Amino acid sequence: MKTIEKDKPLAGAVALVAGATRGAGRGIATELGAAGAIVYVTGRSTRATRSDMDRPETIEDTAEQVTAAGGQGIPVPCDHSDPAQVAALITRITGAHDRLDLLVNDIWGGDPLSEWGTPFWQLDLTKFQTMWQRAVLTHLITSQHVAPVMIARKRGLIIEVTDGLGHDYRGNLAYDLTKTTVNRLALGQAEELRPHGITALAVTPGFLRSEAMLELFGVTEANWRDGTEKDPHFIASETPHFVGRVIAALAADPTVHTRTGQVLSSWDLAEEYSIDDVDGRRPHWGRYFATM
Image 1 (cartoon, rainbow, N blue to C red):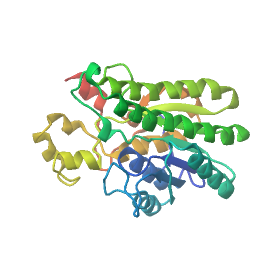
Image 2 (cartoon, rainbow, N blue to C red):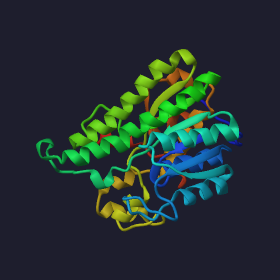
Image 3 (cartoon, rainbow, N blue to C red):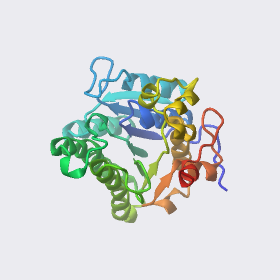
Image 4 (tube, one colour):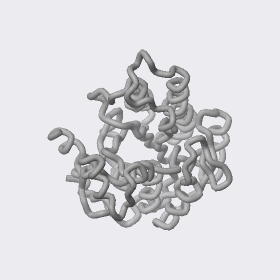
């Protein structure tokens, strides 16, 4: 079992969490900050302007949480579907630090586009195309601009945040194709970046207790277990900090390159690195799901 030093193992590291406004992205950015990293926090929702997600969370809020956790949070508004905005973002980062050690692609924006319960022959193709652009092409665009920076230094880590290991159908064809493709993005990047010493992989959380999910169940983090009245499987859920903590551990692991191209899970990594969630639990969605 590997043990990662808990006292700022990422001190001085420069990270970009693309899509860090809320959910997993916010948890990941915050935990990278807790590990000492300088974290650029990007998204479309700011205190001045809401995206079409129309939620209250902002990149400024996330950046403040990163700093409060012990890192340095830097919010930068960015629509990652626009290559020009991404190019300007990377130029800003490299101009300030001359490097980028870690990219976490967590851009999603697909909740208002998801058509759960709709068979594939009735899917709204316009919604699917927009989902694909937001949740797949944005990842590729961002990696395209980051890869040359990492190649120049012959080091770096790219993490694709996905949903599921890619073995089971996710219940909706548009959603399934989108998330499975993110796993393949990790594999493809890993193969092409391998000669340059750069690692690319994917990480999936389990049942994520995000802000939106808490709101859906009418609970808060303080009384989240009451959400099991609406969905009993919620008992096996995890906070966004859980996947954030395992990603911070991965980024600090000197042997991380041995995992390049793989799709990893929060629950298995937590077991390996002896990591608990913020409430002291160690949820294991894989084990729980196997009993359903």
